[in-house]
Image (cartoon, rainbow, N blue to C red; front, side, top):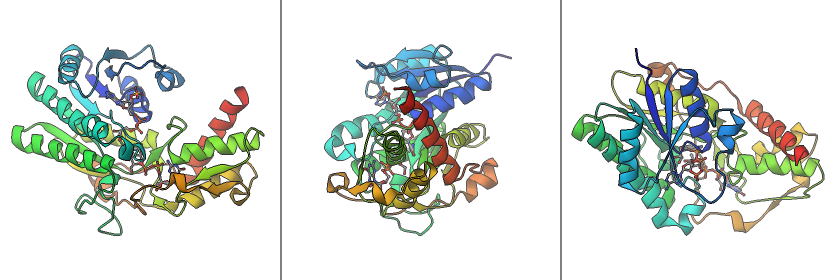
Length: 324
Ligand code: NAP
Ligand code: GDD
């Protein structure tokens, strides 16, 4: 039997790298839509030792001919749309770009699937940011959405287009409504990695303080390595559907800092400085997911708690900083 082929957009991102590794380990031929940049974006694939094992197809999510060509070249059986302008903070400064990449980009991938191979299975990287100003204390697949950023609004458009293509054209199109997930491969602008990098620099005498915004915000944080497994499981189901993927625990940014600093024997209160520059025009104060459906239907549960996750990230940054 021929090996399955997968196309991953956003393959150079945190989740793209972990997902590519998971698919390679399962015997897939892995293709990635790769946007041209003037700087090197392959460091995550290199860290996982798979940069030479994936086939990169040059293209951009905002360009329909790119997504069609990547579907044709990859002959993909499964398509994972992970590409996005994914940083919430940036989305107020670049709302139109965010709409084009994160919103219409998903439509370009759906169109490519519909035109080239409507039998291919499609995964959309939806997000807990769609819940925004939360309408229920614990958010599930039936909780009403209320996005609070141009990013959240763009993702909601992509989410409903996924549902619409499933209902209009019968595509096997699923959305994973994933809550925050982190790892040593997380981008440095996101709060967990910003903290673990700073902790390592402060411990090694390169930095004195860490400037943060709203540290009372609460997030349901899991490990990205666990979450890509849920993406794959969704596409193995007979019927396409939408799933919340979360740990079911929520923690403040402040307590996440406490864990990170304490791991190297420091007190966060001695180093964290509040800087209004990092406050957002509209904040998502708290997110807490209910992963009951993913557990019941996919047999998936998060296996990494926040303490383990943050200490893993601090350890990785301590090694990186000491090598610089
Ligand atoms: P990430 O690290 O920011 O990766 C984003 C990826 O999208 C990168 O590979 C980036 O390529 C690519 N990309 C950006 N603009 C593009 C364009 N115009 N054309 C083609 N590719 C483009 O994000 P992540 O944390 O892995 O998240 C993966 C997906 O899940 C994203 O859609 C994100 O919004 C969503 N999500 C993430 C979380 C989370 O907590 N991590 C939670 C829920 C949903 P470059 O490297 O070249 O910039
Ligand atoms: N980035 C950042 N930097 N966030 C800060 C800071 C800071 O200095 N100080 C406080 N925060 C707060 C933010 O205001 C937010 O409430 C929380 O920390 C988490 O911020 P991020 O780590 O930037 O993540 P996010 O929750 O906004 O978005 C991430 O998760 C979404 C899923 O809920 C991203 O990965 C999105 O792409 C994803 O959809």
